[in-house]
Length: 167
Image (cartoon, rainbow, N blue to C red; front, side):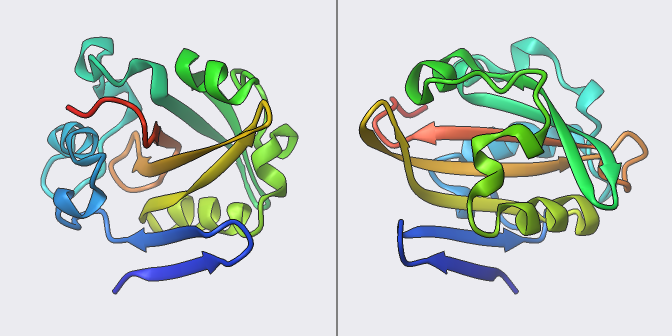
């Protein structure tokens, strides 16, 4: 069963879902989720190293990758931050710790990341990002990756602005 959180202030909706949830449930990021799903085998999570740059044609500028550097308390380092995200949001997260990110102050964000890492759940969020004086509606997916197929060590994410062209 999906866990749903709604932040009434910014109308952000968050769904924590089992990783085998139908890809269509992640609309408009169905194609991105399908790419992730093709890398896993026999019910195991894919490893970040299983992906190739060319797997993400069309998605490149909207992808981010967070590497788990500490589990208790959870700390992650952003290893990849798409250029389109930098352009839209006005900051580059590459190399930064989650605790240094503007996202760290968002209500519930650490708990959500902790559940993705600790339970291997997928996360679907929708809401608005405020940057450069504008409110940009986004759909975000966070997908667990594990070198051993079980223990999550990376989160592969895609933050898709609603105005972006679909695939």
